[in-house]
Image 1: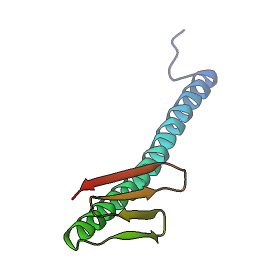
Image 2: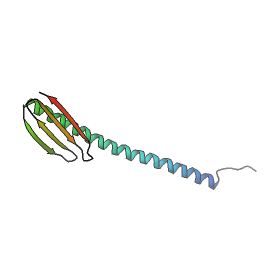
Image 3: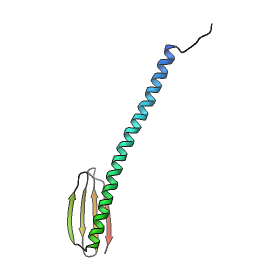
Image 4: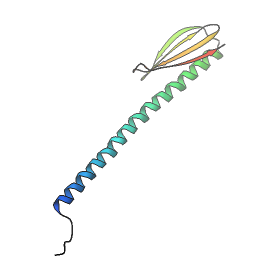
Length: 101
């Protein structure tokens, strides 16, 4: 007896394996998108912090201040001998940029 085609069990097993694989690919895509958005926020935050640090150095400003932005906050302190800019994310991870005058 010659058999042609696939049995119902083989088709169901193949569909389950394909579904699990596709769910893994979709989950990886969602995670990659989330990580990309976080990286873009960090890049923007560090670019602005660097620009603020440069401005404080060039204009020889002294004092302290804070700028609340949409997804993070920039705090700065400038004295006669140093300038410090702290970029704060909501999840409490801080990035500090320091420069001596």
